[in-house]
Length: 363
Image (cartoon, rainbow, N blue to C red; front, side):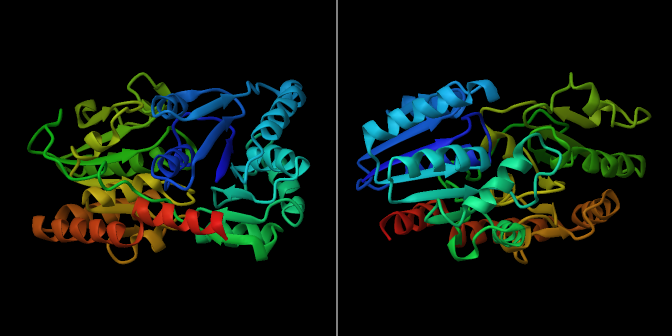
C-alpha cells in the first residue's frame, strides 16, 4: 500500500509528532510511505529521514509561492500514484486534498487537529471555512483527534457523515517512569508545565496561580518547558511577581527530551485555554504523574476520573486544584499517577492509534 502524508510543516507539534509516531509504527503492509512538508524539513522531518523515510519539502513561504508549490505537489502525486493520501490540518487539507482529487486518488483522508474555530489566527479561519464546503466532495473520511473537535466542526458545517475520531497514541516505551536527577531544590515539590509559549497554552494562568501559592507560603518549585518558555522571554518572565524569589521558577525552553523533563516533576499541570487531544497531558499520565488540567478539548475523555480537572479554567480554580494536590498525601498522589498510567496504557497507547488508522486505510 502506497501512502502519502501531506502536512504544512515538520517542526515539533502535536500533529507532527502523531504523524511521526504513526509512520514509525506502521505495519509492513504499508510498503511505501512518503511524507510531504509544504514548507520545510523541520526537526521531525530530519528524524524521519534518519529512519529512512522519504521526506519532500516544497518550500511554501507565502501566498505568492502557493501556485508553484501546488504544481510541485501535483507532479509528485502523479509520479507516485498513491493508494492513500492523508493530509494533516487545514492548509494541508485544502491544498493536499485538491491536488489528490485532481490526480484521481480514490482514498483521501483529512485531519482535524484542533477543537476551537481559529478566529483571529491569520488565514486559518478562511481556509477552514473553505474546507467546510469542500468536505462534502473531496475527502472520503475526516479524522478528528478528539470528540470535541468532531462536534465543533460539524457545528461549523463539515460533513458529519465523514467524521471519525482517532485519538493520539502515546509511545509507552518512550514515556515511562525513570529515576531522574533534577536541577531543583530537592525538598520542594516541583510542578511542571510543557507546551509552546502561547496564549492558548495558558502559561499566564499557571503563573498567576503560582504567584498566589508562593505568596501564601507554599514550598513549591515551578518548571516550564516548551518553545518560547525560556528565561530570556521577557513577556513570560514579566508575569512573575517580582516580590517573590525568581529561584522558585526554572525555564527550560524547547526540549529535545520531553520524557526526561517530565520525570523530574512531582505534579504535571496543563493550564491550556484550548486543546484538541492534549498530547503533553497524555504523556505525563503515561509516565505516572499526578495531573491537573483545565477542562478543554478532550481532557475529560482522556483523564476520566484519574486526573484533577479545573472546570472553571481560570487561575483561581487552578490555584484551588494545586492546593488540593499539594495537601494530598504522598500515597494519594501516587495512586492518581498509577491510575493515570493505566488509563493511557489501556485506551491511548500508540498501538491502538496505529491499529485504528490501519483499519481506516483498508476500509
